[in-house]
Figure 1 (cartoon, helix red, strand yellow):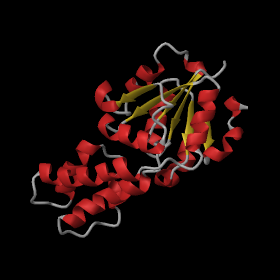
Figure 2 (tube, rainbow, N blue to C red):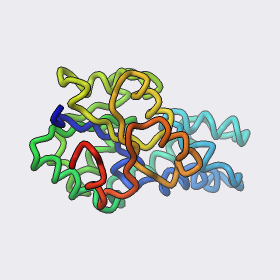
Figure 3 (cartoon, one colour):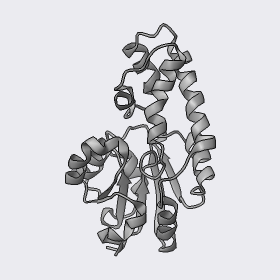
Length: 216
């Protein structure tokens, strides 16, 4: 069936934000006078914003209240989304190509709307997305398929593709019968074999999108 809808994750999929998230926890811990563990980036990469502070407080036995820890993280994250955000190489051209083909573009992300909107505007992608869904607004994380179902709406599953980088989210979507294109990201290098075995296809560089079988 002809592609009608493309559903995109944001961080690590179209937004080149992995380095920021890897360093965010270390930034917080250092600001509070502690030395971050070498594994801190890996330990926190799958955490949502609201999970960061409780995890760091417990893992580093921090005396500061969760609210203070979260405030430091919030400041760093806002700086990135409002002033530093960049799309992955070739992502903007890829989105425009899909739009020109009449494909409906939908964002389905765990990132809060108040953060994602400035980032999309900064990168020029804000005018390309027809709909936006966030885990917070849907009320479910990507460990369950509700956000993908909401983003799909009345479009047949075989006329839609999901673009995701996170291994657990790819499993969620595939297990619910979605067609998934896995997007390579430095954060998931150690899971790439599992990802390629799970997703229907993979994309390591948006500038080589012609390799995708459903776009030829």
